[in-house]
Length: 322
Image 1 (cartoon, helix red, strand yellow):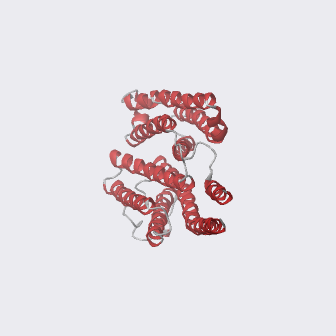
Image 2 (cartoon, helix red, strand yellow; image 1 turned 90 degrees about the horizontal axis):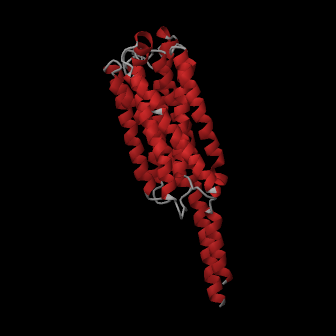
Image 3 (cartoon, rainbow, N blue to C red; image 1 turned 30 degrees about the horizontal axis):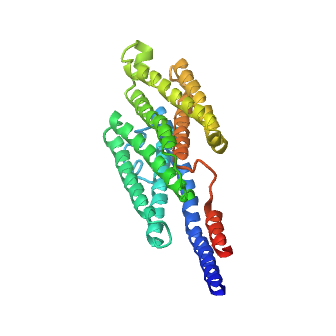
C-alpha cells in the first residue's frame, strides 16, 4: 500500500510541475493574444476612419508613404490616418509573426494545434497585406476594399478563437446547439458589414440620399438589421430560459444588447445627418467590430464555470486518497 501511495504521490507532483511548466508558455500566448485583439480592433476602426475621411489614397505609393517611412513634409490629417493605419497593420503583422515563431520554438511545450493555427493566422496576415497593397494599386476598388475589411474580421475571429481555446482547453460539453445559435448573428453581422462597405465604397448611400437613386444597397443594409436583432433577442431569451447560461455569460449578453441598440442608433444618426458626421460612422464601425468580437468570444468560450487546473489536481487527490 505504501508503494502505491508513493507512486500516486509522485504522479501528483509530476502533474503539478507539468501544468505549471506549460502554463508559463501558455500565459505568454494568452497575453500576446489579448494584445492582438485590441490591435486588430484598433486597426479596423482606423481603417474605417481612413475610409470615412477619404484618406485611402492619401499615400499614393505602397508600402512607404511618399517614398519614406515617416512623410513629415506631406503630413496632414488624411496622410496621418493612412500612414498610421499602415503602421498599425505592420505592428499587427509583427505581433502575429512573433507568436508563430514562438509556437515553433516551444512546440513541445504547447498544444499541437497551436502552431498550425498560428500558421493560418500568418497566412491571413499575408493575404491582408496583399489586399492593402491592391487597394492603393486599384485606386480603392470597391471589392478590394470590401475584401480587405472581411479578412481583417477573419483575423479578429481567428485570434479570439485561439485565445478562448487556450483558456478553455478542458471543456467537456461544448454545447453545440448554443454555438450554432450564436453563429447565426455572427454570420449575419459579417454579411451586414460586407453590405456596409459596399455602401460606402460605391458612394451608394450619398447618391441615394441626395438623388434618390441606387438605393438598393442602402435599403438592403437597413433591412438586414432586423434578422440580426431577432437572432440576438432569441439568444437572450434562450439564456434566460436556460438560467445557468445567463448566470455564466450575463456580462457578454448585456454587452450584446447594449451594442445592438447603440448600433441601430448610430445607423439612424448617420442617415439623419446625411453621412456628414464622421464620428457616427466611425462609431458604427467600432460597434460592429466589438459586436463580432463578443459573439466570437461567446461561441468559443466555456459556457459554464471552468474547472481548469483544480479539476485535474482534484482528480489526482482522489486517486491518492483512494
